[in-house]
Image 1 (cartoon, rainbow, N blue to C red):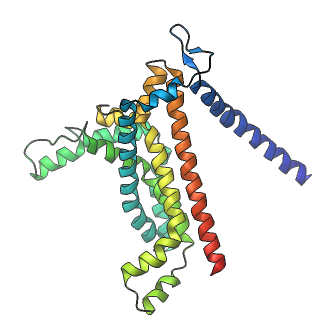
Image 2: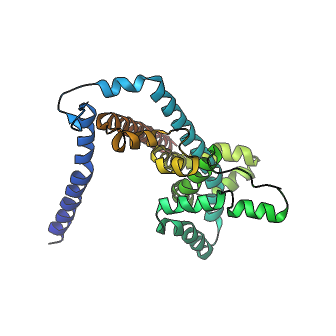
Image 3: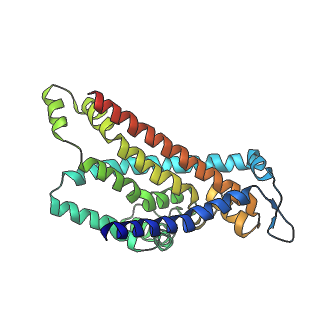
Length: 283
């Protein structure tokens, strides 16, 4: 009876993943090889035109800008999230739970609503400018909204928990006695971090970077609401191709490229895990 129940659950979950995950991805891939039709959405004829167009310098500039913005967001999340996860893991259990709950509370609200909350903070009459004026630090409101800084701050705010959670899961299993042994042997803090802590926490770092980098490429509404869409990111471009230009093959091709990037990053993550596992077996 238990075996039948388990098989039924596995079957239902597999069907769910196939129907709502595999089938849409397959349709997306097929659409990327079709042509745009002036009257209908699609022309059912095979074509590589959508992929050839990605070589255009305009698309290359958008992709480069998106990778740069996602990379900067990932780096800032890592710089802030790593010490936060490390300190949280060193707290007592009751305080650790409270910190994690406070960090997860924003997840109860839709990310679009949280982006509007950032607008309230960064606006000309927002909380930050009002505070600076009240303290006498500035004479006139500073322009933060509709700048690259506003987009970066919004993305870091939205994606920081996705960096912290994998790091926390990895650091929670970290044996802190290794740090004490390294110090007893005369190693300094920097050398200990570089040779002991960093290599052992590398899987969590890579997992966090993937979870931040890939979604950041597609958060088109952040660049629109906080940056005014002055400089398009690849997420904005996909949004325009599907809903404004009605060029579904081009939007699908861009989406496929992002999926391939994610697959490559996951493959790199798997290779790192495999290498670390082999190294531990040798030791």
